Every structure is written in structure tokens, then in C-alpha cells.
Image (cartoon, rainbow, N blue to C red; front, side):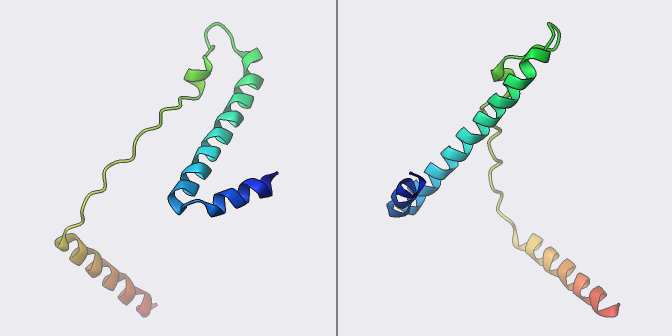
Length: 91
């Protein structure tokens, strides 16, 4: 059965296939978290009890916006890289 679905993914546009794989990975992670929650559930006390939503929050932090690197920063990085290269040569 996996080979049938695998061929469907290969026939999709690249972006759609990646989104489908990412969604499958998210679902698999949630299933693993559920299994962990179910195994921990009998050991919860009134003080330590958490709902599954508290145990495994679905909303992840959004990645920070990408900041543009200035030419000055690129020059600084180049200087540091040159310094590192020169130090490796001395050893």
C-alpha cells in the first residue's frame, strides 16, 4: 500500500508533495505524543493533571522573519573568515 501512495507523491508538483509529507510527519508526531500521554495518564494526580491540549500544544511558535544581511555585516563575516583561515595555517 505504501508504494501506491509513494507513486502518487512522485507524480505531484514538488510543493504539494512536500506539504503532504510535512502533514504526515505532524500527524505521526501527534500520534506519538498521544501514546506518551496515554501511558502517563494513570500516573497523574490532581495537582499534576494536564489535558492533552496542555500536554501537546499544537500551535508552534512561528519562525522569525528573515532579516536582510547588510554589506557591512558581510564584510565583517569575510574578515572573520580570513582571520580563521590564517590561524589554521599557523598551526
